[in-house]
Length: 195
Length: 103
Image (cartoon, rainbow over the protein chains, first blue to last red):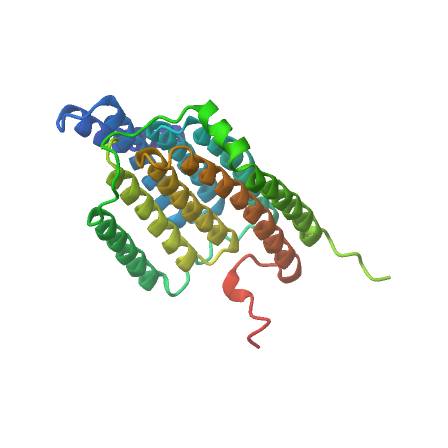
């Protein structure tokens, strides 16, 4: 019985994600890239909403992994394949695992049964919608001087710029990561019991 | 659609708004950190979109996006360590029960 429910939920989710892509591809005269963009954008927004609204926090963490994966796909469509690979390695491979570990370390059994949202959830929702509308208006009314087609960035060109022009920030970031690792271990380590 | 900068930027703005809502509305400290990650990803998407559509930027957008990812990893490390340290003292992950400085 549960298995059928899960299958039904998976079918509904698949239909929701592929419908915009099919509409774009079949009726709006879009290309395959447009259909991919629509499907990945829908998947990303739906799973992002799941991250902030679901009751069970471990499911929020899993939905966050789906969101990051869809975003990696959008990076590929946008023409930045190395950034997409780094997104999969860093976010899905490292940060998501870190967050899942932290969830397992800090959640008690009765946590999902309790209230999920603060009392200011409704004003927060209004503020978020207003923010999204303002960003949309600002984006669509601005002339960015962009090219009419996106340029695909070759990985060797990116590597040339990264290790030539930006080599100092690259090294500084490595020091920052080392400092963050040492600081994280120091903060999270158990205090020694006083004798 | 995949060839217009506005579509990417509006998508990034929507994801940023979702993250803002989660940060303001959730009670769990780790949920708030996850919302911050969503917002960082939205900003990264905007940076990559600019880098791929503005010819003068060339590879700079992707380099900046990679730097943002590294800084986000550092932020997640320290933030989760702080949450775990607080949880060890207060035995709760809910931020509205951290009221030691209000009493």
